[in-house]
Every structure is written in structure tokens, then in C-alpha cells.
Length: 244
Image (cartoon, rainbow, N blue to C red; front, side, top):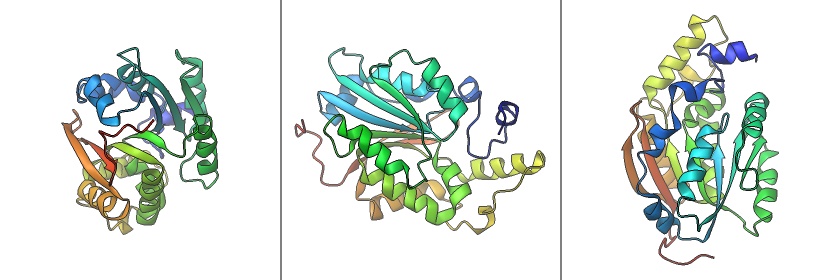
């Protein structure tokens, strides 16, 4: 897919080349509480995080600055995206190469998980302390169907203690489908067969709580695009316990 196509508004995987020009990272970050409160929830002196669908890295950088604002917490973030061009741009503009790493990975590919585990091994960890997943679920759903979305949620939740999730509404699905048709591109083959549809955000939340062994920890309200930002934590995880 060319840069021109990804700029057109009909990127099949959400890999828009100019994404952060129309969805500013700061708009998401300002929904989050004081960074001291957030770090207390995670409650570790070193935080190892994963950012899924990092695009060109602007939001990843914003999250890194947010988590390190006390200048005492050691934070390492791995940003992944399936688009090699976007990852190259993220790597080129990376201001924190010792703490922020970018890799071209498709989280729906079975080869992805071993690579994530290799990254974690560098920190002697078996899972991430927190995973960021902003506006990714719809693209997984449209390209891989209900089964693919459920697999994605299960796999993601399995390898993290906390999950900060922004899921797209069904209106976003319809708009994405219309853009593909309007520009004469191949339609999303799964669109008409999706059963997790009209109340998709609620369906995702129910699935995470029912099947993924996580529970809602805090809701941060909605973005300017009317998308809820919700923090989940692994069921049974006591955030007040030291886990170093």
C-alpha cells in the first residue's frame, strides 16, 4: 500500500500515514489522571509497556513522557505496527532510543508472540506491566472477523497486567466500510457477518471480563471522537502490592 493510498482515508488496516495530524496524541493523554496516580496503580519502579498499533510513534512518545514525568520511574515501551513504512518513520524520529523501541509486527501473526516474549526476557519478565491499545480493535475485527477479535483480546490480555483500551464504536465501522466503497477498494469481507456489532464496545468489555480474566479498573471518559478509554487489570492482581 502506497503512502498516497494510506493518506486517502481508506487505509485497510488503519495505517494512516498522517494519523496524528487529525487525532492528536495529547487529546488522549489529557483524559488520563495525574501521572503519579497512574504509576501508583501499576506500582512498579520499572514499567515495561507495549503499544499496539503505534503508527509513527507520536502517541508512544507522549505516553513515555507521561509515565516518566517523575524522573524516577524506569520505563521501557515497545511500539509495534504492521506497516513497515510507519515503523521506519517512528524509528527515525525516536527521541528516546534507549527506552522506546519500535518493531514492525503484525499482532495477528503467530510469529509475533515469540518476538514479544524475547523483548520481555531482556527485563526478566514474562508479561507486560501495561499494554496500550488505542483504536485498534475495529481494524482487527474488520479484517479477521469475530473469531480474530476474540483471539486478539485473549492473547493481548494474557500477556499483560493492565490494558488501556480505546475501542471504536459501530459508527466507526460503518464509516470505514463506506470509505472503502467510495474509493472503489475491496470491501471488508467480514463486515456483514459480524455478530459483535451494534454494541461492539460493550461486547468487547463483556468478553474481556468474561473470557480474558481481566476486570474494569477505571473508566476515563470519552475522547473528542466519542470513544471510551478504559483501564482493565488482571483479575486477582492487587495493584497496591509491590511486584518488583
